[in-house]
Image 1: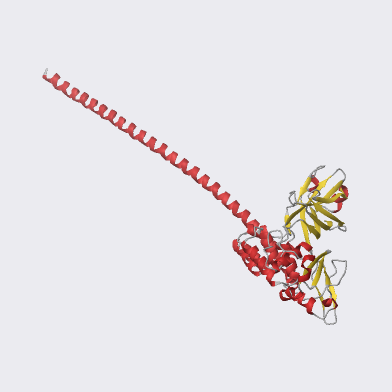
Image 2: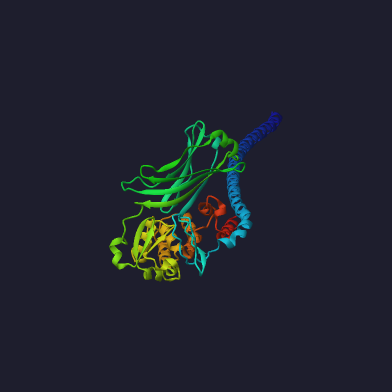
Length: 432
């Protein structure tokens, strides 16, 4: 029995050992499964992190592409401006001397019915007085012209000249192109008129330009004048379109205005006859003034009234190339009146520049510097035309980007004053 017990005991021990090993194996399996579960969670979290990282990298890549594309567009725009300015540099250099400010010499205008007559001669000197008057040119390139449908029209941008905004527009009819000039003076209750001499031009590089001229009066009832059958449509498409673009111009001379300016601040009519010693006639309107007072402010009038000319002793002298309303405001400013505003300032500068009157020019420039709401483009144009150095300097300080350069470029870049071309070029290059 003891032997059996002894034999049984080892078997029991083996069984216990076997059970113990199985338990250990089961425990080991449980531990392994926990580790695998944890590893699975970690791997899953790692995949999520990697996925987020990939998404972030994709977003970053897309943003980078957008930034690079924007930079390319900006660089392209800058390059276009630079190339445009560079291409004109040599051409502008040739005419630079002709466009430099020139001193205006005093002379005596001939008595003539032709307002464009500017030459005067005497025994002492022969000079030309710039009496071209209130003139301007609208220029525009109409695009996609062949796509115009019947009765559809296209407008140019509005431009201000002598206190009034103007624009041109074209319209297609069944067989013709209509071509009009539009005056944007407000339709208020006041009566006003603007008498104009106009020349409508379509520009071609294959045939002669198509030109039509006329004299018309704009008023609040008739604010557009032009030609309902300016050119046949088939001729237009054949001879005047370049890359489906039509280049158009309207040359305008304002011959006479009424009702545009505010009421006169001082009278120079016949009621002032006893206080005057000369009568100046502008567009049939008479101004009674003192010779010495005007001569003290203007070399032109000094030569006219006190020089050795045939007209110097006359009691009545005709002035040409200016508007009566502008001359009225010019004399008002000389006599200390506050006649300068958004409507009058350009006409005043024209007269003051023509008659070399520093007092009026300084007052106009002060108004443009401190009070005027005119656009930067318009102020820059006036500063260059009338040699207003302080205004020109102020305008240039405001030009700091390619967008600013584009905003002040004239319709025809060849009209750009060469004195500012280099500065525009430097700005564009610095931005680029």
